[in-house]
Image (cartoon, rainbow, N blue to C red; front, side):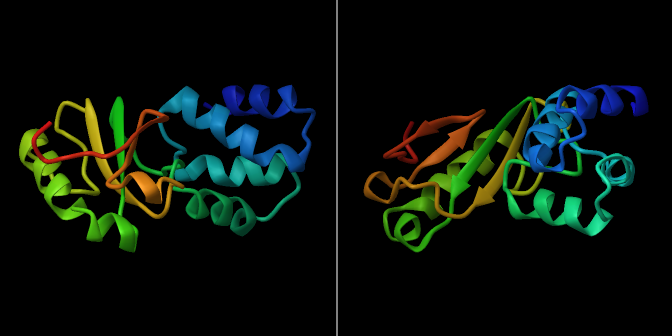
Length: 140
C-alpha cells in the first residue's frame, strides 16, 4: 500500500493543493482510505494528519472504512424529508437488508445519508456510484 500511495502522490508532484485528487485516487485504488495511510499522505505532502483527516471527513464521498461496490448516498435535507425521503430510505433498507451507515455482508452495496446534493427541486434524490437519481419513490 505504501508504494501505491507514494506513486499517487508523485503523480501530482507532491503538490498539497492536489490533496483532493490524491484522496480520490487513493480511494479508487483501495475502495476506501485506510486510516493508517493518512499519516503517510500527510508526511509526504508536508501536512498534518489533522489537515488530511479534515478533508476526508468533510466530503461525504470519502470513507475511512470499506464501502460497498455500489454506494447509495440518499439526501437527507429538510426538503428531501418533506418530499418522502423517509419512505424511500425504508425501502432501501428493506431491499438491501441493512441500515444506513452499513454495507451488505457481501460488500456489494452500502447505504449512506448525505446532506444537500443540489437537487432540492427533484427530491427525494440519491447519488449512486456518482450518478444522480431524482424523484425517487418507495415503489421503484
